[in-house]
Image (cartoon, rainbow, N blue to C red; front, side, top):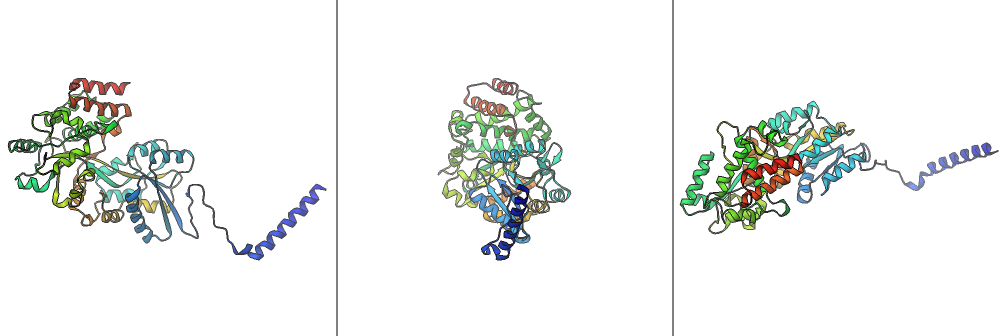
Length: 443
């Protein structure tokens, strides 16, 4: 009896369904359902979707959307959806662990991408995109996007450190010339003091992160006194801080920082002066000091009147070579884009191949605020000559490495920051500082 009633109900439901279908269900249609996180291949109709998770927000996100628009205009069958989050490093891990990764992730630091690669959560780059990288980038960019011997990353927007900035009209009026060697930089320092000018603007105060600016100095000196292989071994701990190689870098910086008359405010001011405030001392009237070492982002800290007229008020040059037997390397950073496991589809590949071309740089270049490593970018599009000079320096670099302290274990990084601070303030002698940083690695 139960089976007969069940059969009757099945037949009745089928009839009702047919009647509803014939009536059109009130004229409504049901759209295809996307999987959680929007990582499905299709949007409405036949358009394919590519999802990207990154750390760009605000104006940077707007500039990246302009990049996406250029790609979508050339590929109208592909919809690229970008999501920027403040806590990117956390969100990408959460989504990967939940089985809901984006198609592509843009890492502001390569360490997170390297960890995902080691865990088997990334797709290695394929021949077509590697060919684009070989064509459009200096070789070291492929090297920096390679984890465990396998290329995974495509670099897009980048930055660099180790630039020396100056007040352009004051510098030129004083008759100073840009040095091309370390000896010439030392001679310029002495010339400035002889003219009654304080050469260096310096400050490494940064709240809980005080000292990082000093580590940038050491890293840039290391990249001009040691090979990149030695630099890598320093990061890994094979070359300790107490080694002659690293100690020499500190001694070279000490000569610059601690020689009487070299730094505005004297040695004690280095630890007490905020790193951003130090940059503004170049543009007092007259300048409080004349040279300032900082990364390409330093323009954000200049006075508004300076930022409004960068090309006329600001000059820069790359920190000169130190050891003539060492090819100088540039300290760089950048956003590296990778494809997540199980998201390797034709439309995803097409976007990654686009990112490796100058066509993906030019829209952001027009907007300003971004520097790019692509050889085929249009340098004439940079809104200021300052941005163009930074880009040219990156293109001219023969070798490059990431920030060493960022790549070191957290305990060593913290000890490095503190050690530089203690040494600069005179609270610790150099040998003690170096041995304490080494001890942090062994804890």
